[in-house]
Length: 281
Image (cartoon, rainbow, N blue to C red; front, side):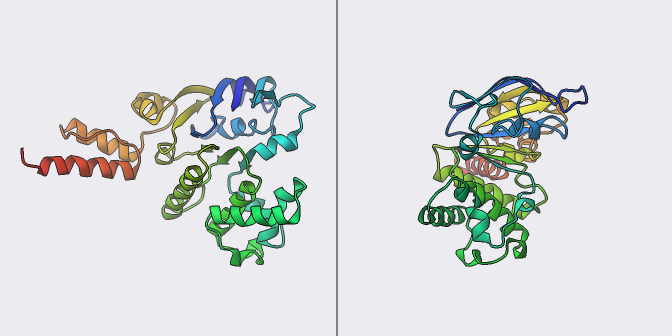
């Protein structure tokens, strides 16, 4: 379990990037962090594995206060894997295999275990082993992003943290990446995923959402609880998912369709409503 207790942090401008934030992240769930640019999202997740340390408050990983100076950060970062925005810019090794293997090698694992982890991580992100001998810089944009993600997965973290994982991707690639993240979560239900997103449709796929504004936690809850508060989202500089807006318009016209927030669930609920209308009464 990951817990932030009264965490505050400033980069020195006098304006807090994080202001007294307390959140609990439970094992086995998927979380989204949303907020407008400058709301503190990236600063928040960099506290999860000690890349930043709070100036006030504590960060607890499985009950251990990782804010202390004597913390074994290698152990922490093997448990909490962070994938940065535009992760393909983190690639550096001569081959795809070596890039994915970098983390496991740093853990001091033997060659057999390293190879096993590299293959498992590549398979998890649908990356072909035929690419292992190639330079990561010769790959397509999507393949680079999968390679960077595989490098973190090869560490076998308990918690996977992704900062704007779909940034810079076209709509089709964003959908594919969202499916990939859902697949990783489904295949590892005991692990936790936290992702930062500007996309409300992406955020709707999470089980729990944190809404940041001005460095503060202004709301949290399930997608139902968050997206049924359009005024709160507007105050935070955000909007409802387009799917939710469509559903609400249909509901206002008296069409009996259940609330939904992703394109897939909205399409399903609209189809169910139309089917009911066709059935004999």
